Image (tube, rainbow, N blue to C red; front, side, top):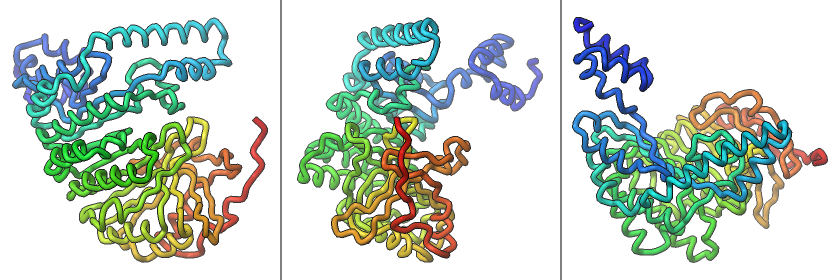
Length: 443
């Protein structure tokens, strides 16, 4: 065994799970030395209900282990117990009562055990020294994901309601702001190329001090990013003046990502899932162009036709893949709610104005509710699209691509005709009556 080539031993380790790695290391001192780096997976998950900050710090300060970490996911999500209890009961309502009760009882016992553990773990923002030193000492860290929307527990019942019912996700907005502020400081210590933040409270950027802190922290770190995905939660921003200040702050941050090739910007308004956030790209970016942008996704916004078209055409020289809309905050049985609304103009005018003017465009995708909602609208264009591919442009299963009746009374359709129109020309596939109302089945 000692005479085996190191390359072959590494190949074997690559196919082993963690228990297998531990057992293989016991066979010889050579195997133990080679297998040391395989003790830590390249992707590390940090949860708030266990002391993962201390674990991350221990790995980062270990000479042989710290180079193994390439990706970190920090999960700050919490459970709305009231909504989750009701949702979990109704999701399993048709099961045998005894089986259902056992399943739910076991699930909630696991949850309360984890909740009890959380009471003994310090808040993430209370240990800035550990966090900053940990990020500073991870030389191969390239991918960071921060989420408030993924189930933090390995409990099937809660994973189902978390994914299928957005109202089961709870967030302490003040604490979220403090945690994200510390992460912004930690970004200066890294060489990240990919960053994802899911459910960024927009009010963080309303206050001048917070905005300055974020701009100072990301001014250099964002310039290294090639992939940036931000899902914004503007739920508490009620006044136009507050929204304007926060959007200007968000724009300052986005403009720091000068080398980004993949950009995703979504707005999810919890409490009003169908609401679209009014956004002017001229206000957001002041005419800024992402000179290397190849992949763009926009979701959950209401905008002006001319402003949106101008934003797309500024990137005509590089844009290869464009996604408009998404699932948004739709429940698992609903059609997508993350579409695009036009507060002025029409989709016919938008798409006709883009034809033959995006020379590098290869793929185009629409998903969710699309509607012209302006007071002066001359068209009653309204569509509901179901997804054809996921965000990685991989084909979705057939059951996801099947048409369904949504709350508006329209039957969902795919976007392939619109993609063909934008890329190849031909007759416009939509019209004022393209998605005729149908009578929804009785509930």
